[in-house]
Amino acid sequence: MATFSSKSFNSALYQSFRPGYNKNFFKMVYNYHAKHNGQFDTAVDVGTGTGQVAVALAEKFQQVHGIDASATMLSNAIQKPNVTYHVAKGEDLGVLASSSVDVLTVAQAMHWFHHPTFFSEVKRVLKPRGTFAAVGYSFVIFEDHPRATKRIYDLGDQPDQLGTMWDNGRLILDNLYKSIDVPLQNVERHYFPDSIKSQMRAIDAAVAGEESLPPVMTGRVTMKHFRNYIKTWSSYKNYCEKYPSRPDIVDVTIDTILQEENLKDEDEVNITWPTVVILGENDA
Image (tube, rainbow, N blue to C red):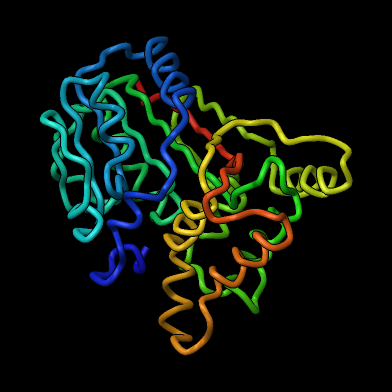
């Protein structure tokens, strides 16, 4: 989390090139919430970054609070009249009154928190039977270029590339939050696919032409856009700061993919992020 909080982190790049969240994610959240609390007055997005989830929630809720520990990230947050941003940690939601929130979301950020303290605050601010919803995604998959997928996994995982450059918490995300205890009622966990190991088996099968991966959180972007997306990784910033004289490791990887797959920067590719969605209900 320290990397994203750094004043030198490029939050404008993050806002422009990080993926949005599939409409199906919000549909899952709203359908779950309708079965339990059912009120759509106030929502909170914790670890909001530049506000992608907060502004989506603003289409459904009267008031939305976007909370992030990084003033740098919030400096490029998307603005809407019914969205208010606050600089605060996920473990300290003191800007919110107790039992005041219908839905609390946390997207691609839960791995940074001290979870017992965080969930104590979640339970405090949620209304009785209010809804908690978390989403996280791991390394990206090229739907039509499995060799490129393996290149990206090597980039993010191998110790001679970016594997040792991640901030603490990344391993929790790579395991799709399975190690996190969610102390709420009626907890649902939805995995796409169901584990990192099965994900890697599916990638190997795709390389062999045996099967394709199911689309869940998907996008169609140019390779130039994808190149810039990878440069929003915290590990990339850490690598560049540690090895300023080395060739740009992302450019080297992407250029290799372009050559191997006969692609150009302006060519579009279909990509998928392995995703977990966790839903839970606060005590009545």
